[in-house]
Image 1 (tube, one colour):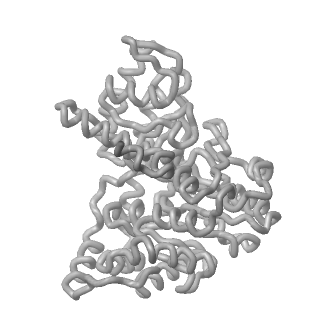
Image 2: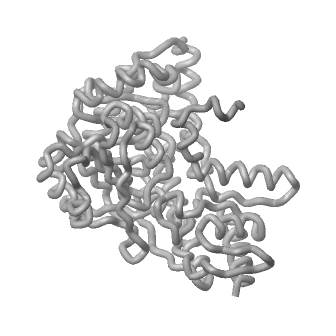
Image 3: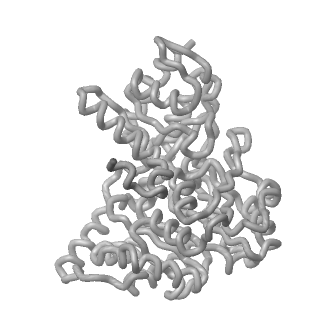
Length: 399
């Protein structure tokens, strides 16, 4: 009786695969197993001390009240400064909206922009929540697939072919979660050239992993003149500043879109927490040395994990240039059976590794790439070495 009272909306919605796998790993650990979790996209570093100190000072100074829905002026100005300094993007305060995480920024956009049946082109692999957030807004996700042979990047030509008179948005992340791939200047220029020809199409560029970029300077697609007024740039503090629990994200958007998102947010959560915003403003304009230290550690871990995975039969691995994930193609192992355990897809493979190796990863199907799995290397080196060892042992048993 209880379930019949639930809305069709919630019954249609899939649970986040990363959160689901984390829950399964915690349950197994609670049963006494030594589980290594590489499923969540969360830096293992603590928030830098100078940022925490700024939050403490804000608390002591009495910043504990409601904030303006789009964010404190101080933080929005710091975000404008950051966009100009790091991305060569020009925004006014009226074009910035601070939210309770970048996830809320994307949800605000979906609810503010989409009507029933509007199409949103999603470049796959994609972050797990894009799909369900689009559907929640009444939109239709149009997934464009890419594989390891494409370095997990969708071409401008494929985007051109997918655009219809129902297309309203294109969404992607660079550096990408889950693949770690980074779209180059030339690749983004080509995509901008496609969007330029379709005046009713807007771009959502998720740049939350901007500061974890190993090979080249980050490029924002909003810097291309032809699409700058039709690009919404999403960012936040969770990855580059190890501030996941602070729940602070933001967007820079055309003013009419920013105002619509602030209106939507005003009916859901209102403004983000006051003292966290004060600390975030300080973080954007303070010493970036801790972020650089984290990036170098992630680079070292990336190479460690890739070198280990390349020794595992049936694993095809690219060299991600950003974020902190590896996204190997493991489809060579589909169709195998061991001890009554049938591996038909990436979800089966992920469950096999959890049950047999006690390593939690996420199935590639959650990211729009059935043949792959995602491993986060946001963990200590000795933990990663042990995890790869366990995975290898479990895979070798498959033959």
